[in-house]
Length: 549
Image: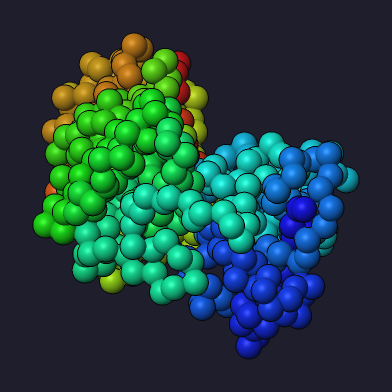
């Protein structure tokens, strides 16, 4: 016989027992077995006594005759893409990635191909997921696609073999317990370990840290492993979390409670398994460093990474490490920091920009470790309003834009009268007037080099712009002539945390601070929109110059 199951959305005042009685066709003798199956097919629910309205579960309904889809004694769980979804009306500024990130409570950079494929499966009328429009009704998958051990992504049904009912004269099967939580009808108590010490630090940090590498920390569900002698070993993942990452498996063994026989069974079942023993005194950093080492990565206190667009990122946090998702894959950098103040989180736009360059910045709140950014927290960025850099393509336009940003009234090709060697002269030049009344001449191609000293004696400053001079050299000459302070190749901290536990970006260029006006960044780079948005929020005017015409 097979067990037929169906999806159900939890309502207010629902209890598991009432749901089973109301939805399923089961007798009193069936109930214990159905409760066990309910736990097995809903590994995302750690405590069946705690379900909440709106939560999606799969409920065992009734026994049916075996079908060709599975062998006799199999549990068939239909996963119907036309049922497991919620309706959503597209709003202005929405994208499929942002919608999924909001519903799954993950970062935009964590959206995987499997998420998009699930979206396509339940929205067959949407031919191009990059093209959705305000007011459009779409379906959003409710059950987040994952690499959970008890769910197969590619299958339309999941097959889980239930325990064979014991015949009256059949002796009880020998079982080798590996945790105290064996009978799902009893209250489960996780052992005291680093995984539950104080807050959920290790669990949360490990889970977040390996996500950029395509990893999962699985903390619920059970494995039933057959031994050579016919005994069945139960591995409770709530007590012994399993980390899957970089084609490797790491089993965390709190208090080192795994017995000898189960170790042999695990070694035979998973050739690539590494068991890591931790106890209640093991520091989170030691656990994470052990995991990083097992994944073939390297951990450092700080790291500088040069990016392809010319920007350099300096990573400083509580945990900074680098690893490869696959042997031939690119190096991925991860920076994890525990913070107390939600206002000290790294702006999501910068997180998105860095993630696109293989750098993942993860902030965990001390008071609420499960809290992290969602895609709706910031409205600017790659999918938000476009921040347009003030781009100039020649020297004359660059000078005009820079002087305007510095508060200098600039008039190109204007007449200037002055006295020289006893003569009253008039020249046509590029004249700037500073807020304090100081005059400035910008001399292109040495047109007035011969009279520059005479102009200087009359308090008129002269800046020479040479043919092959770079935009940064031009900018430097102008601000030096005006006596305005500036910094070359400025460093911008993502957030002010004292400088030692934050990400900082070094941008080639000149950072200018004119008195009483917005700061100005003059750079030869065409900055990413997320960086531009970050700087604009700091009220920094961006000038981007190209060429040397």
